[in-house]
Each structure stands twice: as structure tokens, then as C-alpha cells.
Image 1 (cartoon, one colour):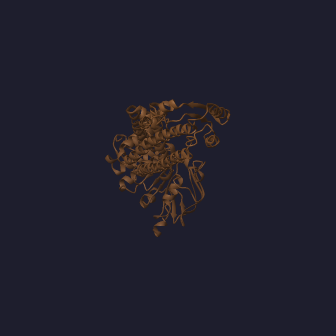
Image 2 (cartoon, chains in turn yellow, cyan; image 1 turned 30 degrees about the horizontal axis):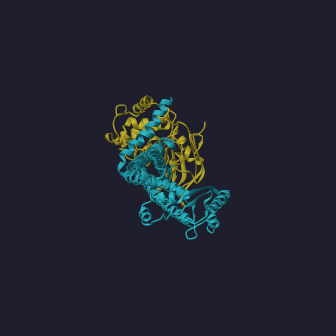
Image 3 (cartoon, helix red, strand yellow; image 1 turned 90 degrees about the vertical axis):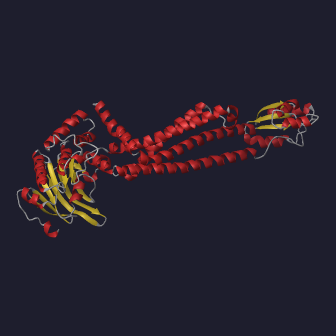
Length: 237
Length: 301
């Protein structure tokens, strides 16, 4: 089975500072993995490399068979359509309703999608995240947890093979965070690979999924799912 | 399918751009103002340049005509001999004769000269051979070849004024250079202001832009609305400047058609309309071009 994401000897430097140092990893379809590590460990850099927001200084990044490391700027949209992204601060357009935010992601990535189809699919995605009745609400009319659900609906509405989330529970209370994690697990169960960068130790420990630990840019531990390991980075953070 | 794609492109590129343009009108106003001023001055300078070019052509035509003044006591055989010599000269296009009576009649049409003519008991204006020279550069040689002829007035042999045409040319060249330099300066200011206004628009919508990029919008879809916004600014500036240029020219033509035609030859309503259309096109190009420059500088892919 082909990996959805593959890093081969990836190094990324910002000036003289190494944000990632010789990272090798692979993520399979339907896999849910956590990316953990102290602040500045390189988690966001790794996610940005997957989404081709930046390019590696060295090494190869493959996303769904596409070489992100050598992709021209004009072809970046091709990768972005294969990667759903969820942020800590949701990044919803405040002028659009929840449904319009979700539909926008569909239509800008595929102009052949009609308004009717976009609305139907956006509504389906919102129902899947438990917000079927809030489609006409604007972001400021929704709670933090609801906004994050809209962001998840937007990320998965085009059914990408990969979902990446950067601190998705950072602004949420613990109960809502658990709901979000259930949602991510459901998404992974349908075959989408999910990679979540988080500081939330409690969630990582209890879910017992694969855990990738970054410390100072190096992948120091790759703990398989079902094992409760020591979160080594806690000692250094 | 085509209709759906067309509707989506219209919505995300054109309608989005128009909506954002309306929303950012405050920050766009300086660019709109400077671009309108630039385009208006471009139109006026362009029409002036055309008029000057036509004037230069008229001057060149006049400078290539040399009047050879005949002495009053010249024998007609000497005048005929000179006429034949000139007519056979390959550098000469044509030769005509202006008699003393015709010279007087012509002088009486020139302001100030009738009084001078009346003050004299006899006709003071000499007869002349009017020679049209093919190449303006040969006028000096023709002058040199005739001024000592026996039929020619030794006191005031010809109308040739060495360097007169060159002086006109130098003045026109200076005006053209000054006009172009002025336009270049204004163009730089207009482009800079427009680039900055688009930069401000990009900055104010950076979240929207980054979201569009993150959800997989192709580059042209992210950049398109900004280019259309620039084109709207340039188009409005061009339309206003073109209309004012056209109105000014037509008003000038209507106000004093004879004198206007003298100092601005070749400027007609059709030419003014063409100039207005060019100004409008230049506005569209300037606006969208400035946006592209700004996008290349300030928008990451």
C-alpha cells in the first residue's frame, strides 16, 4: 500500500537554525497519528512541509504520490486539494456563513462544482460534524468548538486522503477537545490519514494511537498505536 | 458544465473583485486620483505631441520652399534663364512665379503690412520665383547657387534663413523630451501609488488570501481578483481622463475652429475620440499591470 505521506531524509533550516533534521517517516491511509514535542521542536514546520507552504532544504517529501519537495509554485494547489488543514485559530472567513465557508473550499478547488452541489455537500459535511442545524450561522455566532467543527467540515468536504491539524484543541475546553478527537477518529475510520500536532498529553496518552515525537527538529521516537510509552519530550520541555 | 464554471469564475474573480473594490474605495482613492491625473495629462500631452508633430510637418513644408526675389530692373530673359535652370535642377520639385502685384496682394493680407504698403508711393514688394525643394537639406545649396544670379535682387536675394528650421526642430525636440520625462515621472508616481494600494488590499485581506491558498484555490484564482481590482481602478481612471481629454479637445475645436486648426493642426473630433479610447486602454493596462507587479512582490505563492 502506498503511503499517503513520506518524508525521506528531510531537513529544513531557517538560516543557520535547523527546524527539522534528517526526518524519515511514513503515514498510511486511515492512520491517525499524533505529532508531539516541545515548542519549537519542528511540528508546525513538518505540517507546513506536507502542505507545501515551505520546501525542505534537503530530502524528499511525498504527498499522495506527489513530490512536494520539487513542486513548482504554480502547482501547489494540486497538493492542497489532497490535504485538509485544521488550525488552532480555525481560520474561517468571518463574512461567510458556516455553510458558505465549507462550500467555498469545494468550489475554489473545483470550479465544476455547482452552487447546488456545493450546498448539499457542505450541509452533509456540517451534519457529519454535528452542525447540520447551524449552517446559516456566521463564525462569530458560533462557540470555539463549533467553529473548529466547521473548520473540520471544510477540511474534509472534498474528501482529501489526508487531514493535518495544528493544535486543533488549543483553544478548546477538555470536553470539546474530546469531541474533536472522536471526530478525527471517525474521519480516520473512513480511510483518511490524520496527523495531529498537539501539546495535549492527556489526549495522546488515552487514545493510544501512533505518536511521533520531535525534539529539536529530530524525530526521536516513533511509537506505534496501542502502546503507552513515555512522552520523552516532556522531560525536555 | 461550462455555465457552472463560468458562473464560479464570475463570482470568485469579477464579482469578488468588484465587491472588494467598493469596500476598499478609501484606500484606492489616492491611486485612482493619481492615475486619473496621469492619464488625463497623458491624453493632453499626446494630443499636443500630435499637434506639434503636424506643426513640424507644416514647418518642414514651408522651410523647403525658398522665395528667390527678383530685382526690379531684371530683364525678363534673365528671369526666364534662372527659371529654366531651376526647373531643370533635379533637387527642385517645382518653380512658380509671384509677380510684384501678387506679392503686394499677399502682403496686404498679413497684419501690419498694408500700412507699410500704403506708406510707399510705389509697390515695395519684389516679384519672386517660388521654388519647392524636394529635400529640405538641399535648400542651402539652392540658395547659394542663385543668390549671385544677375536676375536676383542683390540686397535681399532669397527668403532662406539658415538654421530657422533647425531651431524649430530643436524647440520641438526639447518639448517632446520634456513631455516624455514629465509623463515618465507621473507614470512612476501612478504605478507606485497603485502598487501600494494593491499591497494594502493584499495586507488587509491576508487572512482571506491565506485561507483561499490553504483550501486549494489555484494561483490565478487567488491573484485574479486583485488584478481585476487594479483594472477597475485603471478603467475608471482611464474613462474619466479619456472623457475629460475628449471634452477639452472638442470644446477647443468648437470654440475657435480656425485658430485652433492653426496652432493644433490635425486635431479633429475623431482624433480626440481615438485619444480618449487609447487613454482608457492605457488605464486598464496600467491598473492591471500595477496589480501584477504588486502581486509578484507582495503575495507569496
